[in-house]
Length: 213
Image 1: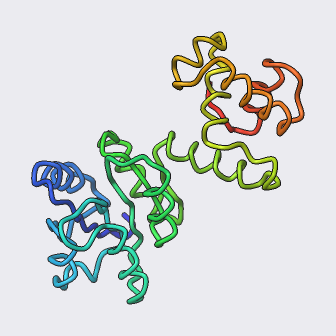
Image 2 (image 1 turned 135 degrees about the vertical axis):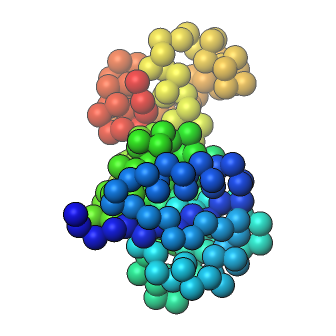
């Protein structure tokens, strides 16, 4: 057997924390060396300093998970951090990764997938819940466009609705715009993507990972 992966858990929900600890300790190549309800408690523990992988929530009492990652990296700890959270918004995702987290999972991730993610992170990978990875790819493609050609958040929303086949009136009701407002945004979408029809816009949006099917 290879080296045991030493895991630290920082999660303020005791049921979630104990559940993770129970099924991770079953794995032959893993050992939970410390389980904490706050980053402050973890930081004060010598066991925490020995971790290879840390699973950490974002919404912690006191120091947040993102602030915790920043502190870990600033102090030179070599542990890799996987964020495990309920938040799937762009701001939390990118702030966590910018701070130094190598992975980002939603708490609904199955025990089996969490085990796989820990092994991936330990081997140098960056495990992510699929829809989180898609958000990152979408943002990359948006930012890769010339600034004047980047679709706005509203335009991306309408482009996604175009892919459903809804009429302009139906899209307007969904996004709370008049039909004329929808048409205005669609003209802008066509111009930026350099297309002339709904099908071309949807096709290019899919090819650039701007929208999902």
